[in-house]
Image (cartoon, rainbow, N blue to C red; front, side):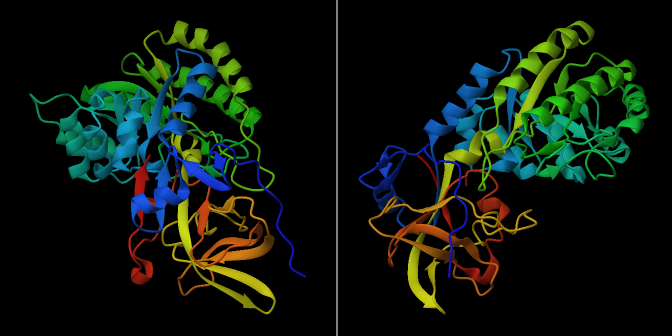
Length: 411
C-alpha cells in the first residue's frame, strides 16, 4: 500500500483563485503563457518587499540589511533588492558585476569567499568594494596589487570563530574551515593590515545558515559580539563594519516551522548599546540570502507523461534536478525530504492521489516529490515547487544531459 508523506507548513503566501495558483497578480496559467515555455522560475516582487518590510519592522532600526547575491543572482531580482536593502554581498567577479550594475554604491558592496583570483581582487580594489579577507595569503596578494595613487584597498577580516551555530543546516564556522581566518590568528593579521596601511573596515563573522531555532541564533549572536569586541582590541583602526552574518532559515520540509524573529530582535536590541559604547563607529549588519528571497519564488514544470509502475503512479515532468538540484534532495540533504509541491492549476482538485513527481533525466536521483498526496494530474498540468527563490537555477547542473534551458521571470 502506498502512503503519503507528512504535510508541510501552509504555503499561503500566494493566493489561490478558482483552484489555480496566482503569482504577480496573474494566474499560473496566464503567467505560463506569458513566459512562453516550461520549465521556469518565477519570483514575486510583492513577497520580496514584504520580507524586507518584516525585518525592518521587527529588528532594531540601527541594524543594516544586506543581500547575499549567491542565493539568487538573477539581475532583475538583484536590481529590485538593491532598492530595498542597505548593501550587497558577492562571492565572485561575475556577481560583483551584477552588484555594480544594480546601482548599489561600491562602498556598500562586500566581496567574500575563499580562493579569490588576483584578477578578481584587482577588480574589487579598483571598484572600491570591501574585500572580506579569507587568509593571510590573500592579504599579501591584495597588498601587492595596490598601486598608488589608486584607492587604498578596503578590507575586512572574515573570522572563522571557535564556535558554530547550533542546529544550522550548513555550518560555516567553527573547527577547521576553508572560510575565514581562525579567530586565534586574527590579531596577527590585524597587525599586518596596519603595517600595510590598508583601509581597515571591520569584521565579518558568519557561523552557519538555514537555522529555524531562535535560541540558537541568539546564542550565536552573543558569542559573535563577545568575539568581535575582543578582536577589536587589536584592530589597526576603528571598526566601522561588523557583519554578524545571517543564518535565518525558512521552512522547507514537513515539521519545519517559521523562525520566530522576536527573541532575536530583543537580543540584538540588548547588545547594541554596548557595541555603540565600545565600537562607536561600527555599523552592525545582518547579511541574508535565502531568508530574503527563498519564499518568494516558485519553480514550474509541466507534466509530460503519467505512468503506473507496479501500482505506483509517476508524474513525469519536463523539469528536474538539472534546474532544481535542491528540490531533488541532492544539494545538502543527508536524508531526502520533499519540498512543498502542488499541482498549480489544480491546487485542491476534485480528486486526490499519492504520486511521485520525477523529471526527464536518466537517473533515479531526478525526483521532485516522492509519494506525496496531490490533486490528480494529467499531461499538460503544471507542477509547482514552492520555497524555490534561493539556490535554485544557478545552484543546479543545468548542462546535465543537455536538456533545454530554464527561464526566470520577476513578476
